[in-house]
Image (cartoon, rainbow, N blue to C red; front, side):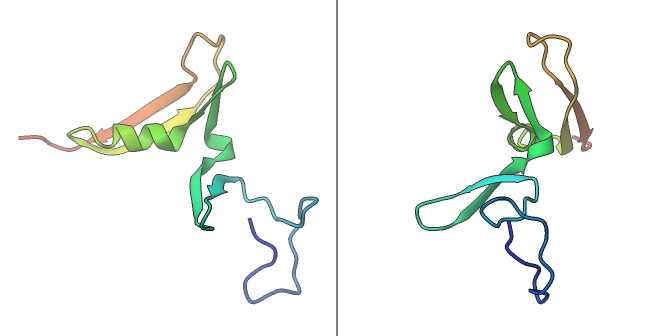
Length: 95
């Protein structure tokens, strides 16, 4: 979130009630003031009330041998029993 544009403080974006511009990023500040970005709000998967971050799934899947790129994409599910995402992986040649 930002309060003003860098080097253009006269231009203010539309803000929320506390004066912050919403970027769509999901994150938090720790006790020392460090900012951690978890994911984008449009990429968060809500499965029966459980919040699943696609970036966390991508980070886990990218640790598998041979996976070069991975994308977890939220998609509509017909029921909460189904997993509402599409998975796309690009594999490296393993010899």
